Image (cartoon, rainbow, N blue to C red; front, side, top):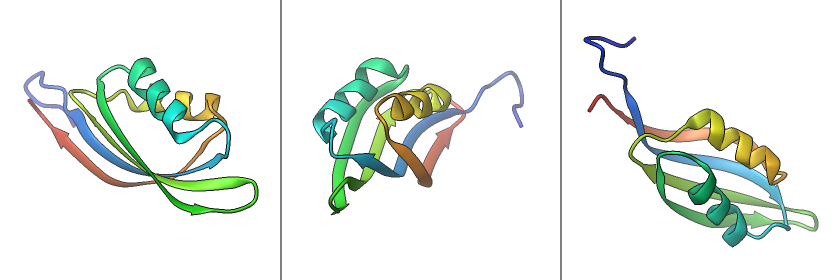
Amino acid sequence: MESDGVRPKIKYLTLDVLKPHNPSIVDLSKGIVSGVNGVSKVVTEIVEMDQDTESIRMKIYGSDVDLDKLKKILREYGASLHSIDEVIVEDR
């Protein structure tokens, strides 16, 4: 619920994501930084790998992360968002 005309901003997210081996985590991370408004930094770590997929943990930093656009970019890269495990939201 927004008050006083101040819109809360997403500053940080930790995501649990499943993706195919290709594209690489480098390409996916670059795609998020360049394609999602408000994102300034992405830290991506492979947690588990099997024959066809990689489970990755992504830490997304920014000034006002566009969550809808982030989800869209993940889908475009063939990735599936399993969960949002941590979030920091600020009002200023």
